Image 1 (spheres, rainbow, N blue to C red):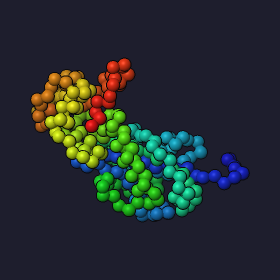
Image 2 (spheres, rainbow, N blue to C red):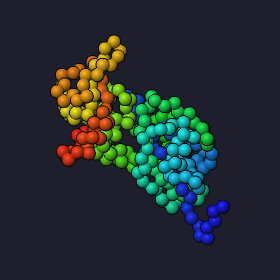
Image 3 (tube, rainbow, N blue to C red):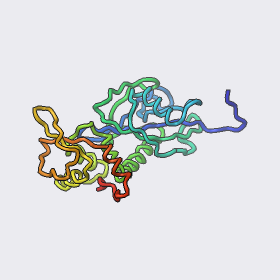
Length: 244
């Protein structure tokens, strides 16, 4: 039994789950099944147990409420406004997660009535301060995209170049010239290029620096994370190659 002489805040975790469906970036929300804000849409999350870390709590709540597990999960901010929760003094540790939407079957559970994807520019009214949490998560996603290969977490292992370009355009909120975008991505040397033949993919090479004449309809790609990490660890590494 834990007892304290002085009042202390409770701790929750909340997860902003980004998923790409090929056209739009979506955020996974749950419909709350309990008060406060019963029936309102909110981020998956809940109170931290006494015997778990915030990372463990975030993963547990994510699975209990949405059936999502084994995803890229990163802590990005602590929200501590005094009156953010009408029940009591509550701090929340916010995480964002990146998944390929088609990989997961989302099933609402625990204290959630249901879970549903919403296009990130067309969200419903949200409980608590979750609109502010999402706003900051989007800013963090923009920052991370400039310094890490985080966009590939939103894609299937094999993807089209125009899907990758679409993710960059959505997150950075700007358009890119198709040819220039493809040229820069291929010149990085960290994509494996595959030719589509009768619905099957045949690898061309691990490095595609010299392959610049492909059409989008005939070729697909995969990200070579091992080669990327090896290059990043060398003294020759100068600048993140996917920064636009």
